Image (cartoon, rainbow, N blue to C red; front, side, top):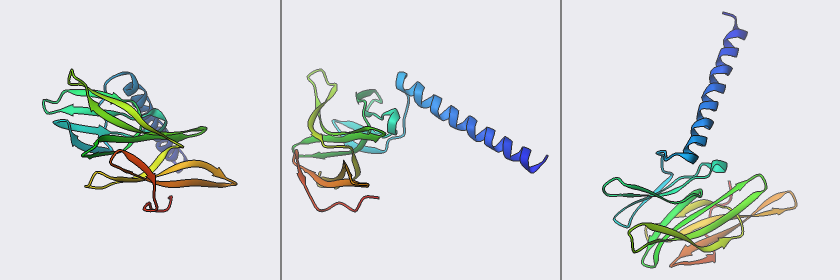
Length: 172
């Protein structure tokens, strides 16, 4: 086999793997699929699992002790924090012309299911979320362009309040 034919086979195999991955992600938007969690926090006598799959949109899922799953929110989740004032998820998306983000408060309803409500709409998509054991989180928000440079601002979530901060690492 020539080197050119060998390279062609490698490219075809790579394209097939890519197609299978994209097709699997599309199917997961219609069917309940098990995603690897990017973030996980014990809460509500189970676990909250958050995933970020970019433009295919991640999820916030609740897994009870008995293994029952509930999709709480369809959104890319970059961080989950829990403190005395409640449980909060940080989510959003920056892709092409989309730039959105929010802080969600997670509550248990009377019927035992969980709900997510917007605590605060952010000026743009969150990134570089760092959560701490005291229930606080620092994160950057992409707030648009200044000339030809991306503009980010640092925020801190603590006790259900979001305030500007200077504790974030520089954008990557």
